Image (cartoon, rainbow, N blue to C red; front, side, top):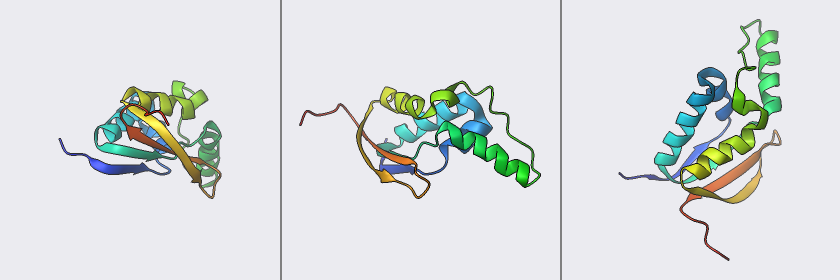
Length: 114
């Protein structure tokens, strides 16, 4: 089917992972890859998961259990592994967000030599 030229995932991977687990994150990334010719992802590193629960505690909200999330320990590389497994390659890291998170640009297909 038809695909979008670009799909973006800003500040979403951690929340999907925390609420839907390892399988939910994998399914989301595979679906995003199915829809895209190119993909920009802002993976939220492991430290963000701890900060998430601190923020929830401060707001007197229920914490999200994160200890059982196997992908969390190396989540940035795990996200890349899933995306590459869908037939993409990383093209660039076009910058960082105001929170210091790296943006990663992936393109469908094999990497072409320079």
